[in-house]
Length: 421
Image (cartoon, rainbow, N blue to C red; front, side, top):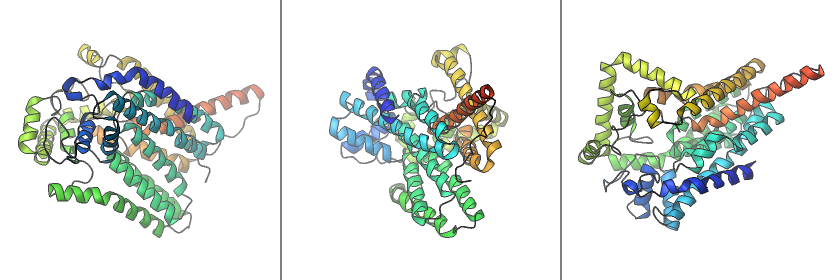
């Protein structure tokens, strides 16, 4: 499965990589802010300069992916064709390797038959192929790490090994240092597994503390660096205020309207340079919250639209919007169908074993919350796509089994939602 997935993604890379070598706006399409920071690291200027000039140290992004990209620049050159191919090949590898946790998530939750459907489903999953073969960003690595965190959490429910729980903490911390969105779900998955361990009467205090300490030790160097650099606590990234500002303004025609980000607005860019990163993002936070306060009804409406968008892909059918997002009609059909099949699989899993279905519900509830209240991007839901594939595979496998049973007259009981229950 993994080899087939990698081969397919690399073939697609061969068709799409020229877009990432476009020199327009000083190679902005080559990783955006991640590419800028990677260039700065490769040039010996440290973790800095996320936009268009030498603006100094930054916490705009979490450190792991820009550092990986900087390593590629050191070996293959900055913004070269070879670097683009290497970066997309690495993202494709991360995506292909995700077949492994997807397979074992499905096997742990639903059995061998579903695992086969899920593993091959991920190998040919359109979103996984496109966003790894065309998008130089942390998305593919974040998806792999999110799937591994989820898989490990499934096993923690019945395992009181402090070492295994510490491994969960380290993995969650690495995920947060890749993309903080992993930390929106990982603590709640850990808390659920901790509760299940307590309910089963097994040792629970030491394993849970081991996970907490491991997370803290893993992320501490980055937190300390940020405090020493900016003289204020910045846990993972500095730009939450900007995210709120970009998604909450008078322009509601798009889920992330252009013209509010310093990467595409000269006035915002000058303001970023004048104020510095920390003061600039703090000001954007104030402006965004002020707009929300004075437009509460609109904010509620926009938040509900963001909910719909994240689960269906639908934002608008206006001519202006479709000119900007011409692939949306097809994407809406696929995304909505995927969500329906996924929730059918989740419903079947809940009927069979609510405790086994609970981790999926935890992720689906907590993971997208921040995007409901700030703004979404088309790649924001990708890290939980492995769970969509696993549950969709369960729905398909369950339907196939029911059809087979109807033909033979022998109705078998669906497999449990968790092998540990």
